[in-house]
Image (cartoon, rainbow, N blue to C red):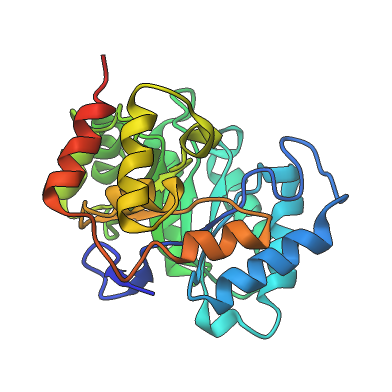
Length: 279
């Protein structure tokens, strides 16, 4: 596995991590595939994908419980990230949510705690005051945000008195490049790590037909890699970025782990960028 520095913390995280949306259910708990999910996560950890991202919202907390099972006996080697829901951004609610996440994860400290989505109904100063208390109390090591615009990141950072926001988790893939005009260059300029979720375009990358997908198919054949591996490798050209594809199938987990150890040529990267250029 390859590793990159989390902002300027000195902490190294893998360039390919494990996303968990819909593991343990969507917005409701679903335990029908728990065993399969635990095995997939454990395999990912064994293959070096030691960044696990979850949230209290996923499966109404059940995703965190599944992650706890995968972490059993492996906690010291894993970078654990979770998220607080925007409905819990009031000061006391943030503290309660973090405590409950720790209980479900069965760990003493999260490595990264993130604001899941912006919530303009709660003053950001109140929320960030709670986040700093969590760092001070040892509940989380670092503070991150998710789905925040440049302005929202700036406002959140300005509300912090001691800590720095280390990451912004946003959707990014060949088929969704909406962060490229502003969020991506801002994060690169300011040294924030971009955590790219849905990096395979919610299934569009491996399953899309025609047009730019023909170019993707040709380049994948050239490198002897899958479409998904090429698409993830393309994202990793951005040095301040890591990806967290979700996989519950072991074959897909192994496929995602095969993204490292090679690089697309600048010419092929440009071909992909042009083929998938937003209209």
